[in-house]
Image 1 (cartoon, rainbow over the protein chains, first blue to last red):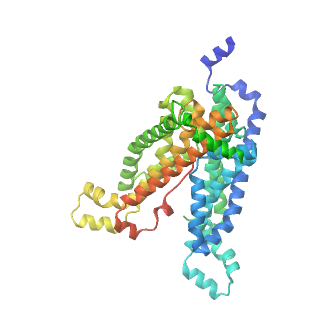
Image 2 (cartoon, rainbow over the protein chains, first blue to last red; image 1 turned 60 degrees about the vertical axis):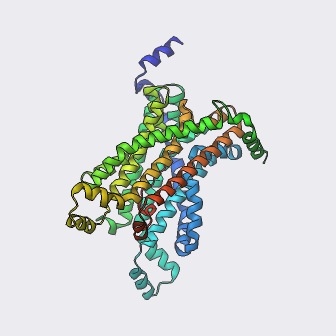
Length: 223
Length: 235
């Protein structure tokens, strides 16, 4: 007990001894965090692609799609986790459902904006070259909408990495588990390590997506 | 379905509408923390964004700083503020203010930057001086994006204020955190419903305010501000 009190007084921001003996724990949290992020962003993209294309083509679908997911997006994540726990328990599902829903809104909106911005002349030219609707969408419209989609992916990824930390409250959390540990034990080291890795992960993911965009869309490099 | 019935009867119990853990007090705490954070944030962010946009300098720097700031998890920021400054509303408001600033800087900067240069030239030609041009020409044209920034910030602050309960703060998050800690799922869902409702009411009422504040001529001219506004979710 006495040593615990002493620790509170002199607790440094980083206790290297603790860190050196907890490397596997920290790396495990990092791995969980990456996994949760990838699932949320990829699932969000898979749902929002058809939804965005449909909402682009059928104008009457826009208001309902943006309204439903916009309302969902407005609801704080902690409220959704709390509402889901009685049904899906303290599981990855409870964490992923809100995250995927948020990403769908961000991505659907950007897919629509990207598709809307394709110039009519380009569509006319494609029609003149004999493209049917689906090949035209796949080979002309979606590639031209890619910069907007990548912009959406960057926002979705960075915000997902931040929100995942909150799932620590329901026993998941990835790096958020470190932050939560730092909170309940008043122990600075896991807090600082969790925060720092979160920021680094978000920045690396953001830069990675910028790099991926440049590789995938060489024509947009000059921007 | 019995859970929903429990939630319903919780709301019906008059004991839950009085006292320091009653809905009115928790709601007032939540709104107060949020309003203070957004107002302080706006007092810092709007002048910065507006001046940077007006003079067109250091804008990329400001946007890069606020983009980098997004990478900081809001939950971690609250915990750090709590660990450094201890209990109370002060540390919570400090963290929430830090979260409120970036969207308002970015959107007001972009709003001012996007004012048509021809319009600025015309104002100059009509004899407007610098300040008059800013106040009477550029600001009204930038209102849609400035308001979009305030709305984004406010909704995010209301959402993040829910986490205040985790660092021993008040607000509606208390029901969620306490309900979880005591395994009372009905209380947890009550908190979820109240928090969601407050966030939606904030969004809709600020959207309404935005519609009122945007001059009619601009409303007809522009594509929806939501298309160009940067939104970001922190909690």
